[in-house]
Length: 302
Ligand code: FES
Image (tube, rainbow, N blue to C red; front, side, top):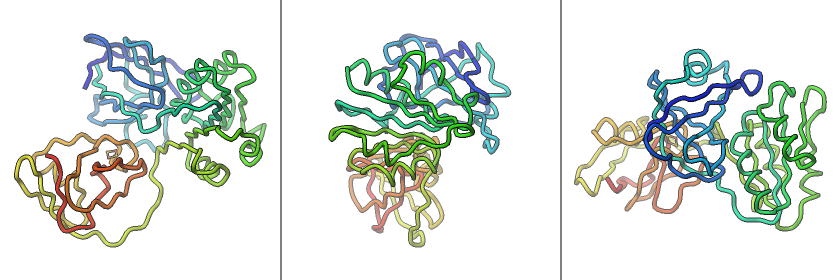
């Protein structure tokens, strides 16, 4: 974890504040557009936020937090209780949504989903790519950074306030893309679903805040063998690998506990993991808050 001081809290839209976190001891870890951090809040909750500042600024991280009326305590705490000057622990940046090289980009943002796309658009423009942003929200007042983005990037940015403008036509956007264009989309589930229906999966990159509903067979118990320490940890049906390992004394970091953030990644060296996350675990890794085993034992590098 990295120690930071909350330097600045600023409303950036109706219901959304921007937090600027200043390094408390030495430069902050480098990051690339699309990265997020886990923010350890003083009320013992940990929440994930996309970095939306300047990657070249190693003294500050910037994130934006929308107040969620269904808050499980994270956004509510940030909006009601967090004050400047507070010391906050922040994880190293993690990037499940990296910007791949391309000559053309279409960025699709819905509401607070704009945050990872702000530095992506900047990098794409800096690289000389053809880059456009389509930014959708209920009303202009609720859309963080909309005015700044329009002022900076002009015609590259098209804002749809759905109360007045309706919704963008994704099929028309897809038809207008060049053959090597990539599409990056972050927003509510309905927008991600519409993007998946309109754009070929080979060129679409999405980041989810919420897991996709999936069906699996009944959970079976299995054993996790921790090969470095030589211990075997039983995982009961209905228990997560993360909980079993944590209760056995292995301090696995965790954030979302829903398979969307990547905090709980562990290395698998034997057995058959059953991946249930929404990130796409790289070979030899698994996200142990949701993923299980389809074999009777799973060997992990712990
Ligand atoms: S805690 Fe977020 S993916 Fe496991």
